[in-house]
Image 1 (cartoon, one colour):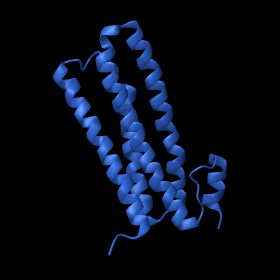
Image 2 (cartoon, rainbow, N blue to C red):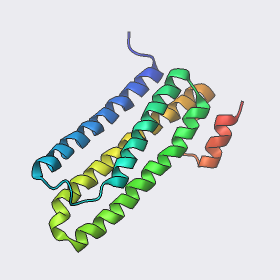
Image 3 (cartoon, one colour):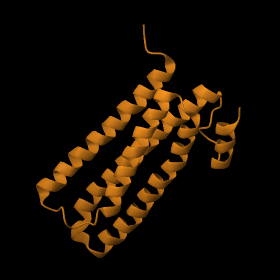
Image 4 (cartoon, rainbow, N blue to C red):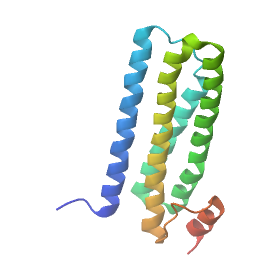
Length: 154
């Protein structure tokens, strides 16, 4: 007998988040082996990674507890990961334009940033599914204001 649908949905997104984490590890190893670790400022990328990990942990907690309110907050928090990804990308493009020798390592970091952003997306998918299971409402394509109403509705 297979997993119940909510568990299968969670496991699929968790597996995909793991695939993204593997991509991050492989690219970081490549950067380390190239010796180019200090050419790009990665402070905001680290913060973005920590935020994505925190959101994923909270999504799993919301799933375990079937907490719709906590899940709704996760959907909101993923916006911060998305904003961080876009800001890092803009800054990275400017840096690569000004210093072309940084392009190879810059591209590696861009792929890392995208993988981190996707981890946040998978956490959001889990959270949205929790809202669906608990509230019976599909909140995948609703505004944040509408999401709040759906989560708090009886």
